[in-house]
Image (cartoon, rainbow, N blue to C red; front, side, top):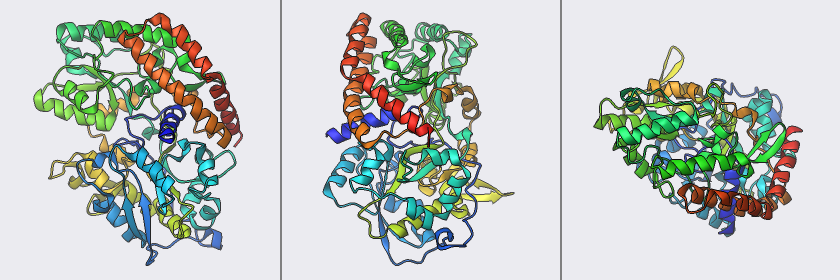
Amino acid sequence: MKQTKQWAVGLAALTMAGIVAACSAKSDDAAPAGSSQPGSPTPAGSAANAATTYPLKSDKTLTYWAPLNPNLNNVKASYNDVPFYQEWPKRVGVGLKYTNPAVGQQNEAFNVMLASGELPDMMEWDWRVFPGGPEKAINDGYILKLNDLIDKHAPNLKKYLKEHPEVDKQVKTDSGAYYAFPFIRGDASLQVYHGPLFRKDWLDELGLKTPETIDEWYTVLKTFKEKKNAAAPLSFTLVANGQTTYLNTGSLVGAYGTIPTFYVDNGQVKFGALEPAYKEFLTTMRKWYAEGLIDKNIATLDAKALDANLTGGATGATFGNAGGGLGRWLPLMKEKDAKADLVAAPYPVLKKGDKPKFGQKDFAYSSPASVAISAKSKEAELAVKLLDYGYGEEGHMFFNFGTEGVSYKLENGYPKYTDLIMKNPDKLAPAQTISLYARSNYNGPFVQDKRYIEQYNQLQQQKDAIAIWQTDVEKYALPPITPTQQESAEYATIMNDVNTLVAEMTLKIILGTEPVDSFDKYVAKLKSLKIDRAIDIQKAALERYNKR
């Protein structure tokens, strides 16, 4: 569907720091959130600021649509069967009936739902990349503008945004419209969770240091191939859903001072895949691929194949999350080889000693899994009160840690996950158990707490990774801008073709099916597809954002 393609385009083009991992909403490392807690509800004073008392004791049942948390795949088929989602309506005092689309069919199901006109009370989605933008979703009668409702019935969220103006700036449109209840990372330590990973046991065995430069990467990967007989020394998915996934966050390509999407450099919006530096990057990657240093299956590699590469000794380097990547792969590797070790490496640079320019880092507001209220809802006020629960003190603890005495216990005021979560008797991983009893490792309508990640990253390798993956990306990342309705439609049309071309040519040049010299023709083609107009749209949106 055209609309589905536009949604995918917007996601890749507008989010610079979020990975991928590869779901529309982040999975197990949704990335931590904050030590800075929402605080208690605003004291009752006027009707507009009156605190809500939970449970509400309503006899109403609201409907809630959301894609299934990826951590629950193969664990539960429906939110209706998940302990957290069973407990949430009890605490709030409102009935809830959940609907989640089939895994892998989220986009199609979303579009079919909108086209049907049969909308639930609440919808969990990335409304920032809705074709035409969130303002269009409001104007077309899909979702409500929430300003008055938040002002009157969401004292917890209202208080948090007032106390955090930079976050407030991110969660609304240029016109000042609030369109969804946001997921907020409450602490900077939660915003970085992804980067390069290497087999440290191989490095030690071969007398190699963790590489820092592109040249050092080349030496290490070549040695892995020659001395460890690694069939795929570096393995990762180059393209997913028609987008250059890991490259967009700076993996490898960032060393050349660019990325194949939009960024800001000296106040100017640039599209990195146009830059001469991108040609230089592709030239290097083609050489590596031709020499067998990069997985020959990067065009089709899926998560299962990558798991097999890492646990089977075919791969010595990849890119992954601290939790669902490093934290999952290392125990699996040790089951086959007790000496196996996997550690983070810094994003590579060209000149030793330089700080990486690009890398993964999310903004405080992470737009996937934001919850909007349907314009068709007859219980909008009740829905607002339900959603505001997650931003109050009690809701903060529940969303981040679950139920006291079951999934966590307080130790000197610190919410510590129980063995049910961290040492599950059914051998479920913490990513799965947390997702059963809380939402701290997945986006949603609440402020994430850094005390979650302090426990979730159990391994020292995970704790070290966050510091190792620090970059200067904050200086270059586009904030969560929102083009106007008119701009969004034009932008989506342009970027649908542009992103397809970038992904195809990136893959073809690296695989060797197109000569490197075709880059100049490719740039000309991008120009003919009106990439300069897309850059102008992003520039205009950035200027408006800066004036919010």
